[in-house]
Image (cartoon, rainbow, N blue to C red; front, side, top):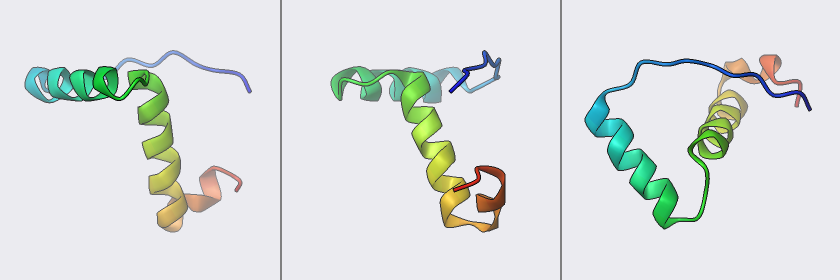
Length: 52
């Protein structure tokens, strides 16, 4: 699977807490965001966009 780089604007406090959460749980921020995006699309009508 090809990966793409993205740029986002996120509240500094939220990002800092999320980054710490990921570090404490041994995961990359990008991997966790991708998992959350897949979960959101799977659980809603957006599932047609992920092809699964």
